[in-house]
Image (tube, rainbow, N blue to C red; front, side, top):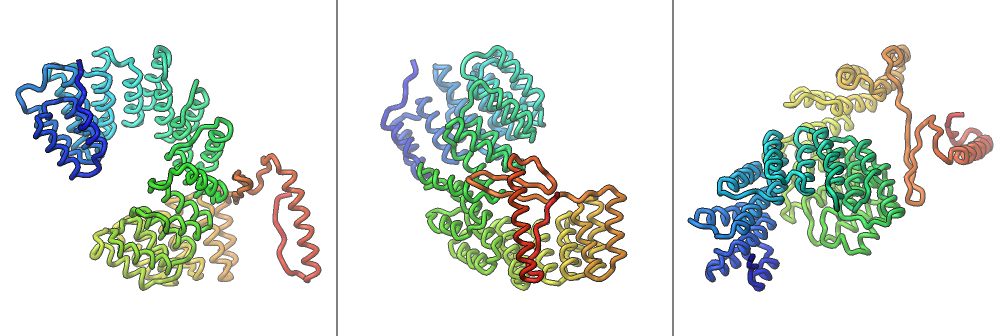
Length: 549
């Protein structure tokens, strides 16, 4: 019969929060000879690894297994093996993931038989390493032990096949077979398959499977919402979130709210974002959850309310590097370059080390207010002072700063000597700068490179055409338009979003599918009529709205 650890030790383990607590508890265990208690040691390994001390946790296992005899109870022995595999698979380090597979292999070498916990734990390590062949071997062993039809084993195998090499077809076969013979609560298996489709960006199959689910939980909804948000479909993410809340009355979790806040930020859906903020405040969810508060800062900044973003930032007792970087980027986005740099100085005084993304925000801040000298200083000192090697994104920011400020030749020279192949964003920055400063020669040079990288991007042709027109070179401007027609490049229609009563509506030029199109059209006609009347009264003052008849 399994003997559980003494209550006082269970209490100690639950209250461990740092390495000093771990050392004190370990000493308590050793002094009392309780280190021979496998269940207690398993709980200690689990607690230690959950706090991030993977190396320490593994050392407890290796010390125990070096002893001549673990225990007479095979179940207790397997329990400590499983706990150690689970502990090692928690780490993102390939070294620990490989070690988890080694410990799994030792189960059978020790004369034991893997159980329904062994397979999911080791498959998590397989996913970390993206080792498909190893995963197939574990699958074969699960079949050999007769455990391949257990719901948690099937779920882990679906996750493995979906993650390793994108073998989503193998995952789907396992899923379809599992649905046909596994009875009981299989929602985790459905969730794993939906998440598998999301992982490869197949949102159509993910949505189709989601709609067929016999039952859903918050994880089901979150998987789909996060999938839409991560694949640049924020309007779909918000629609699913609203359906979850209003139609199904499902309370969202932290991940769902992070995903929908990201979608709100992309769309500038301020009203919905503010509603989510009030919702998490009401539930008390964001007091200790830094990522959620970071997402609120990002949403407010991108939705145009930098004051609210600063309020959320200032109320945070604990700020991560992401917190600082998000508010710096938000200030830069609002053209508050000097305020962004002041925030960076505050971050340094708080002894928070900047990362690569922080410098993208800093260089962007310099760009917004034309601080060329300061931008040069930060760019040139990134590596020597902060130990961060500039990436292509930093070169792109610097090219944009120089180009906007009129240093076109310096920007071009920087592009020529950068240790990366220039991408479309960099050539696009040069083309835009050429348009602002009417440099047709540089514009032509940039467009030639863009034609190779983005041959069907109509916006680039339009920029060069505008450059020629501003210089009075009408023939050249017309020639660009002719090339667009002859090569089949079509001008992408303009589009916009507007939020009304927490709902985001999308409008595309020439599109008439909106359910309230007729009413909107009638209002536009009335507004246009009023503008014409005002224009006549003011003798030409004010422009007219343009829309397709």
